[in-house]
Image 1: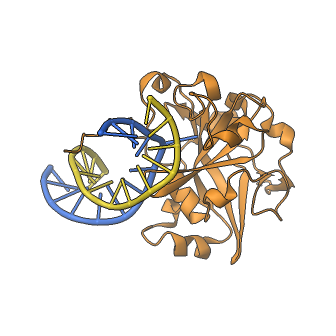
Image 2 (image 1 turned 90 degrees about the horizontal axis):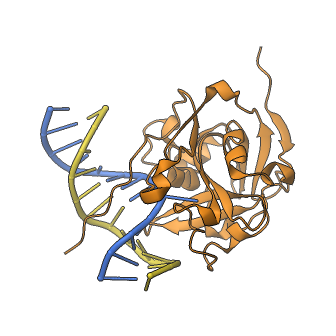
Length: 213
DNA sequence: CCTATGATGATCT
DNA sequence: GATCATCATAGGT
């Protein structure tokens, strides 16, 4: 007997906590993207915590800029950034306000709207790869910087929102170093995922880029 | 399965 | 000019 997912929106208080509490608690929650063609729903299976101004791995580490301004605002809002010249990544801002902490949404399993996600992810050979990785997740859900700053606690009518879903029991949560984060930010096991879930992305250690000639 | 590499542009120094 | 919270592809095992 399994309990059905909770369709209530996560309250803003959920995000107004330290990011290391919020991040593992996001696993199993339901992210909804209300597109022009219909809704896409995703069950979160992998996230990473970024602890703002005290975290060398965080975009907020060197202070507020035009790009990261949303991170310094109130919790429960989307921070979307563009990277590597091609990709978008989606974060949710956590509290306390001003700490500029956030959770990178790294992977999930598409429930509703699989056909819509497939159209946006033509290179995916299996449905479990539709949102396996942060840029794939953003692509599958048609998330770009137009959604930067969206309040995700406003309910499923909003273009991007999150429902309580089915939280994951602590004994199913795994943790380890963050993907692609090097230097002093690499020591913290601030990546969280659901054990044995097929939609979780493979771990990649930080690799310095080779110099172009 | 695995590793290596090019793509591509905003952002920051 | 270098870096970047990445991905798709090519080719080897």
